Length: 452
Image (cartoon, rainbow, N blue to C red; front, side, top):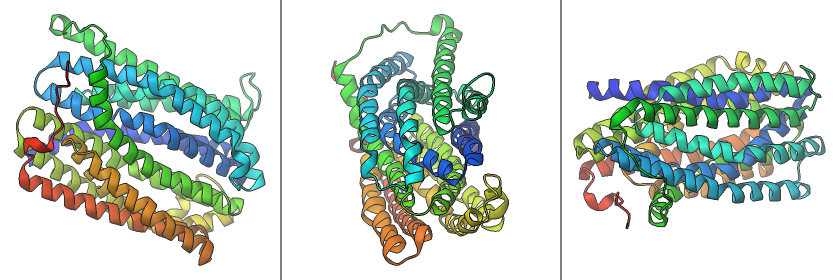
């Protein structure tokens, strides 16, 4: 178990830093539009949340590469790894059009959202602009999953950390009007985000080419050949994972939209606290990715005992780290909130929200990591169904009642969402425990070889 912990941490460390870098781009956007007022903070959060609720399904389809590439790599078949990379790139191109189309539909229906007028006028321009970064975002997802499957995570960390610099400079120039650029406000943040996503895709694409060149003569020659059968396999594994991620991200996007129906101060407090909680979530999310790869690699190598050890190691590591993070959110909320805004009303409400967030950290980490290790074992359907019931059937309805019917405001919304997280974490951890008792019988694993 100690040996597995060191391997997990070597893989997870750069991934966690990379995830924090990914999340930091949203934090930078919120920080840099902060001087424009609570309405700008709320609008940026709502717009970004709605776009990601749409785009995340396309990104989630690529999660199937975690299992497929890592298993092929575990079996020592580099040619098979390349074939799955090619299918991922093909799928990214195919998915771009519907993602952009749905974003424009959302843009055209803004009047029906019931948003506060000060927020609604800023949401439309952001959605319109950010849709242009869809293809780079999906290509980034493909390159990242491929590299992770090969246990090559350093370039992912570097790409996401440096992308923050690109995003920050572009925000500074386009939000407030520097370097000869017009002051575009919230719309400028959308242009900066699109530029950062183009940078990410380019950086990781070059990292993949560099990885191939380093193999020299050992690099297999595999012509780029999209395969309908392989695409079906990727979608069959990736679609439930994509649905699960969409359900999870979507419920928080829905909560953000509901918070937008409250006053701008409550909406801003929700957005800032959600950013802080989402930043904390990057830790178990990175562990989940590493756990998925470690489990998939062990399955591909025909070592179910190591797969079991990898899964429990990831879950145990997450529990320790998330308890520590929860204590930070509970004990020092005010400095975290004041980093975003000096508004006393926002800070007061945000303190309550971070106290609630502190309480669900352990469960949020458990559900994320359990989802990852189950994905590595080939099970993407169970997390999807559990998220549907927990978040949409339980968490959001209870939150809505507590917020709007019981009069608890945005705090009630968060209490309901917390209930959903607890449910999902308990069920998925129990499912993983049952799976370890059977040591992954072959019948539970999707076939690696599609029809020719």
